[in-house]
Length: 153
Length: 105
Image: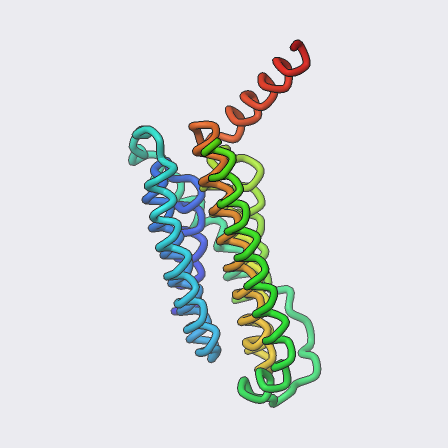
């Protein structure tokens, strides 16, 4: 029962995040999406994934709030109660297939590899990933600095 | 309860938002929803089969997603400051006008 409630909340908050008029409320609804996702992970036993989802979600949302404040150039009209009700109903209807339908076939090969073992086996990928992250951040900073230099001329 | 369908619905919502929204920030939110749908599918399938590898790969996917998000947000701020708006159609229109002026001169 709780899984169904969480999936309904997930879909509803995703719909609200996309279709609300105010950007700040959209970001708040996205926070709800991340929260419901983390709760789904916890219930299914993926605690590490939930913690990571929560941490990354908080960081992303903080930046999104700042960007939303910076990018919202003019006050938009408020979302009407009719539209809010429509969005809520749409979210509930869209979550019904996930509750009542099933596409899962026979289970595949099971493995009892723990999270720690799996992460340790992937330790080579950690280095590659860190390099990728640093490279991406460096490219982002370079773009910002280049734009600043062009703007200063 | 089927998480494959749940993630498919999330993916469909994200793609619909990506195609229909004109605000740059909403486009970014759509991309986040698509990434969330992919990770839900991945983690749920792995955890239901008792495979810890799913969570390990999730960390890799999240790290990449965060780096990509940082760059996208930086570009969003630059573009919206340059054109004075965050509406994609207005940005395209301004760019077309600029190209036309350059072609005339």
